[in-house]
Length: 149
Image (cartoon, rainbow, N blue to C red; front, side, top):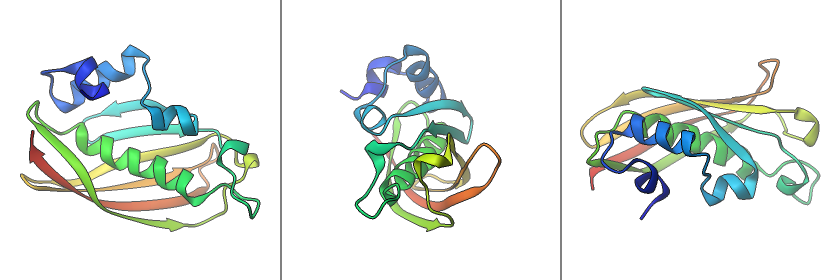
């Protein structure tokens, strides 16, 4: 059983995510990369993270996968927030543009995802990764498959 099912079984997507947030529980990826789920509304999901040594690559910057994970999470949960209690989703495509290198000095980063459109079988979302001053570090677009559980 998934963590979302454990905390919000039988609820629609938005209610499931709100239940997950209020439970204080975190899925493993959020623990591993030390980021938080901080806001959700219909078609919107926000994650924040403080990049540190745990996310560094050998060339002296935060690994691109750190930004990609925050952006994928924001896109996916934005779509999840629009699902019925019987629907699920999975990411089919994630396209990332890296605008500026992330380092430990970047400070708290905010990944904000929004649904562009959602249909019976496919959803489209976009997300941005910014710092506290609004400086853009990365952006993403995502195509997601929507299906019945």
